[in-house]
Structure formats: structure tokens, C-alpha cells
Length: 170
Image 1 (cartoon, rainbow, N blue to C red):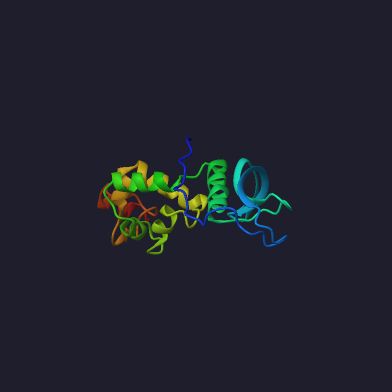
Image 2: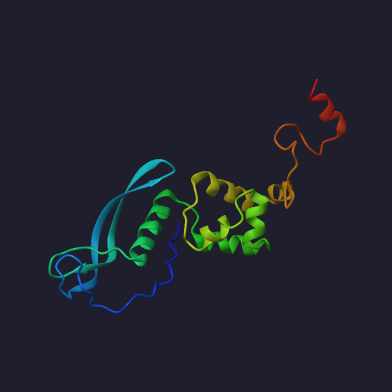
């Protein structure tokens, strides 16, 4: 899976003042960084080899900004092989749905897809699997309408005939 780079986040110009040593020696620096991130109640170890983070040249303090957070989130998505926000957006647009319509059809809270597409949250494995199935199979999209799925979905064979429905309850 190819990584799609995030849009750069605007920040104030360097150098910054270090909150630890109080020197104006903080610059964005590439470092190797190891961390653990909890996702779906599992702790995942990540190693970012070209982690671009504000670092004090005087005392070595690392300062975490939105760009650093985005890099960690991108590394986690890549490790777990989750759909990237831009992939979700592209697939949603390809089937002609708005983010709010997709949330509604899947039964997610109204702004969930928007928040995932904006990179504000990382979808769970279950949500990722559900999105993949929804995008891959037109029959699934037909089954999950704006008013919700047929209440019999998954309980009885649907669309085969009434006699099949009646026979399944005997």
C-alpha cells in the first residue's frame, strides 16, 4: 500500500524557544523515533526513521506539533494497513456519496466519516473492514439504504421469495 503524504501544517517559523532550556534553538530535525500507540485496545510499537520533529539543538528536547502527530498517525495506519483518509474520500466520491450520507448509510454518528477523512481520528479495524466491504460490493451499498438496512438482513435469506422466508421460521 502506497503512503499518501498529508498536507503540510502551517506553523510559526523556526527557530523556536525551547521550553526546557529557554534558548532559541528549536528547529525541525529528522530523527529516529520509537513509540507505542494504543489502537483498538492493542498497544502497537512504531519506529519512525525519518521523523521530522522540532528539536532543541541545545538540550535535545523534542517538541510535538500537529505535523509530528500526523506522522505518527500515518505510520500507524501504514503498519495496520488501514485505509488512508484520502483513499476513503476518493472511494466515497467514486460512488457518488457525501460524507454525511456515507455515515448515515453505515450507521455511524453523523460526522464520523468527515472526521476520518480529515485525519482527526483513525478508524477502528471494524470500521475499516466495513468501509472496504461497502466500497467493494454494490449489493452491500444497496442493502444499506439511507433509512437503514432491512431489519431482516443477516437473519433470513432476502429476495429469494416469500416461501423461503416462511420456511426459514419453521
